[in-house]
Length: 485
Ligand code: SAH
Ligand code: SF4
Ligand code: F3S
Image: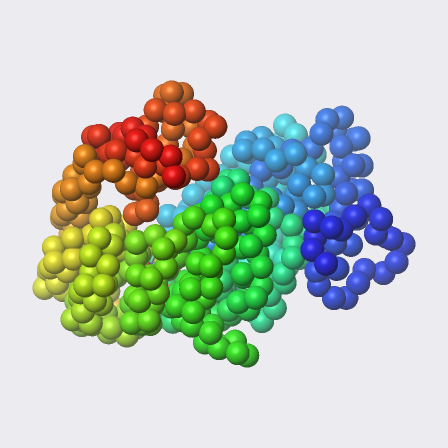
């Protein structure tokens, strides 16, 4: 039974909660509705809730699940941290993501003094770290609810516990092999959506904390994924992004193994869908069949995000990436041979322990050879518990900064040059939102994910247009519609 068909008000709360999922959460949604109603009477106004998201697309998708529950239990969703209930969905991939959360919490505490009914919750990747929990317990006692990445499906149940308890409720699981389907989701956009195809990561790149906070790799069954996408397409979604830390290893551990390329071909058949994206591809598992599937599937955007991390084979080995510079370049060659106009984007880390001038120049060399359409560049951030954190040869911060600036300059010059190549061309664009600065403009995206602003109105949102890119502004374009699709 799908949650849309559930009548939560008819659930008998005098009974014990069911043991099986998702029925158990349906029960707690019903129970929570009563608590929210009571609180509303106390407060004298409808209760609002805000979900504040840090981190990657996977966290953004989790936030839609949190919003779905909040809406079902009776909150009105809001974007403001002044809301009666604020939940921070945290990220800990780099220390700055982590620090920002503490900053927001301080601010929230001052608001809580003004609004005694205000509740504050924390969840997401940061909560899977023991040192974070210790710190919160010691210095952030005003937080009402804390949970992690593995029990997010129990959000309704945890909310109930929060309402029933006077102190801080903390529930963190070390790991889980459970995937609970069919819980409410509230999509941020009506016309596009992320879809989890897998959770967790098994790769243990030596700098990265994700495998520790997200647990082992688990794939959803193709049937569940396809059904979810079909439902979304019926509901007007035209673009989807298939999400996983390493989509190229999708399906390997299923009872009936399926490859990512096979899944892509199935998704491509879904009627109503116009665009398919995916993130992230690990170069070590990128198969020839995936390249072929991308080429053959008309709905798959000709865009590959292929994190390089470093161009030095020596550093790549210590990073535990399982490919070297030559293998990476070979994949790029194959992709471009098969799909000449493919857009390539990447992630690069500067200042991994022991990185020398020579290693860095190897990264610069790959950047120059590949000519990425865009690249995310990061300064290495030491994450407690990862192998790289205890390496003794951490880099000199001034050197790292110098390299980072050099890389950023190169990357930007190349992206601008690449972006210029499309000026004057007519491309397919999905109209996504009204322009924030100028109400006569609509903002849309090209297949390669670049942004274009063009004259239009809100009625165009969610539809595809042929747009002439009249002017390239470096990171974005100005354009005009030449035809509807
Ligand atoms: N699963 C994806 C990456 C997820 S994290 C993949 O393997 O490509 C997103 C990016 O953050 C990574 O690609 C990496 O470039 C960066 N990153 C991860 N850990 C980092 C760290 N400790 N310091 C700096 N950047 C890091
Ligand atoms: Fe982190 Fe590597 Fe897993 Fe990506 S593949 S999430 S970088 S461990
Ligand atoms: Fe951050 Fe967790 Fe994503 S650490 S990058 S939110 S998986």
